[in-house]
Length: 288
Ligand SMILES: [Zn+2]
Image (cartoon, rainbow, N blue to C red; front, side, top):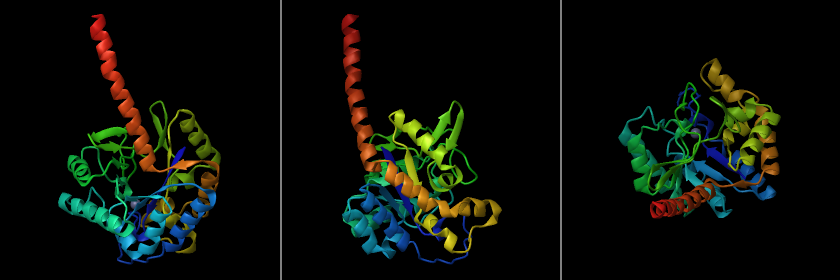
């Protein structure tokens, strides 16, 4: 199964855009389209939601939770983790969890950093998430771009803290080569046959590739580009009209699960593996 996720934010939250103070709230219709699509196709997904957006659309957020989809945190104000000070980031995460839990009435166990801006070395961040009761993070992009990620991030799930799992966003690996696919700009960039081939490849290996889309990507062609510089404008707008048909195709053709399901699956496997270890050790010591 693929893991279907949405980074629920407004276009002005994106760090590709000019910080000109214009905050146009318009994601509501796109979020409704996503919920309708999932319900029509009988699929499930995780919605990583920006806290202040949840305060803007509380009824919609409750609908997402009531429909049985997972609600997770995408921070409170889409603060870049590597630009703000540590205390401000901690307060932002705490507030996001509180707001999302108050509005949805559900417990929030997943976190994704704005624009993947977390680093593996951010010990304070992992401590803070663990203290707040988060069970998984999905922020460490295993590919380097001008904005985020690192080639030293693992492509496999790993433990950040005893009770906190890292489930990294998906990239395809070919020996030392890594290719991001199946989300945001990469879903618009690669032709669909490439995306489908790479998804099939991961699925055949027993993995659960993570697909992600931003609601603002569904209607970018209807408004003027607000990204700063030619590169950001290209990343933010390339193949803008393709997000909806491509997402619809993936939702129709691939059964999906939530990140919470995947987290639980990994924990069950870890538990089974840890139970096997002492048995093997005991067997060895007996034969010695
Ligand atoms: Zn984001």
